Length: 385
Image (cartoon, rainbow, N blue to C red; front, side, top):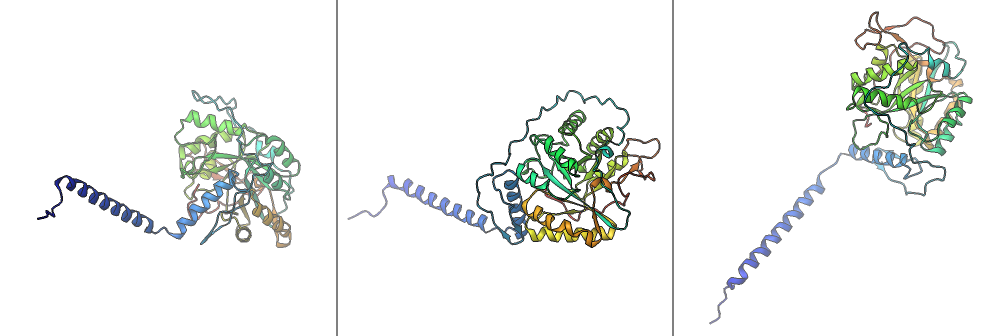
């Protein structure tokens, strides 16, 4: 009579195979659950836009990417143009044992006015518009294309970009105005603000030294604006230190408003630093239709307030849109001016010069370049940088 029972020696093997099969089924179920978790269309578009923008600025793609709601595609990666420079200039970073000594105990005499574009500013019969082009210097070809725009445009140069003094001088000679595009710490941990970024974790000596390093990258600028900085511009102590360094240099500040909670402009006002604030980003989405829509909105803001400031970047679609739009301004009763024509000056309250606690009051002193206008409203939502 045959014995149908499984031999004792095979029982552990059967049990082991059963357990392995069960684990494999569980793993498949867990993976399927992960893959079915929904990601909102808005989040997917934002992540794709950031990836595309980073690839564009790192030179891995040479054409401005398109990123619109529901339609996101990465273009093929063509070879880099021969004129593209992607290696940052190696700056000699300062030692941080002590803050660099600043000889002047009082600000330099309006250095920003000496370096301002000498543009005839008409009486206030026309609304005024200033265009700032950020991120100048790293993409050599697009930088040179931007410099051919009709003056006066205000160009903000990355201080770690290589060999930019000659380009800065060329731009100034044709009537444009220059800013230092000061790298500041963003909220996002996935974007690179650059090697000379100002961080909230720095000591006062480190922050002062790095600010001085960035301001020494080239000459001929009227002031600076923030590159990224959604985190640092919310830090009152850091902003007070940076603005005081700028005040001693006699320059102005433009708040790029990368955070709706930025205290940068109010801190500049408190220390008596001439300042302005961005109203419109031109190329948050990079296709031509979006840039033109942003320019139309800029016109509305300028007519409503009497002036407006826009920030764009040296991208092909942005340059094409500006080249079409700029010649239409005069016929619309609008005037293109350098950003120094739109700065606001506050004076610290008596006894509180240089202190962020001082209550600022608007100055009645005449300004050689510009209109003293009201504070611009904050942006409607947070930026990713």
